[in-house]
Length: 225
Image: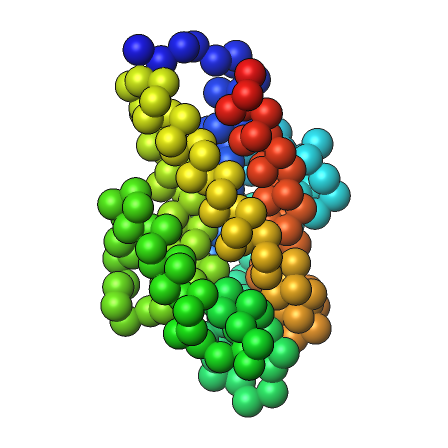
């Protein structure tokens, strides 16, 4: 049996699962109309509006979604910009860039990919029986995959049927944030802002930086209450 949690904590668990899944989707492939329809949906806008109190970056991301929902011309322009930004600074087709969406590019001394840090991320996935859909074609420490993992564990936490399993999942998420996501996401977001200073990717990365730190605190508090 799982002890019932407060409505506030349960709502936050649903919100964090949504946000990590959103970041995974935004950074996981070239943006298209389907993605922008999802960003304009009442579910997305409503969830982000509920999270405004978490900080200014989340409020800006919510405002972006509200704007493209209300203005078809702005939506078309932002989709075009996002496709360009993705291919230039996320997929890596641009020659001159500062940002790299892989953890090992920020935590290894030589900023190389597929280093020991990548294997550590893979081991963290395996501890929970998780394997990325694109394995082994995409490095495990890509931002999209790390957020997909966080989303998967967040959803599993909501579905856990006993206290031991819920505690294991909460501890795993807190540990992954501390030892992986939070070690590089702020530096990455700073560099991404230099490469693509406005638009969906800049806003989403900034929102993740803001949210991840408070999320770690939330998980710690939830585990000890």
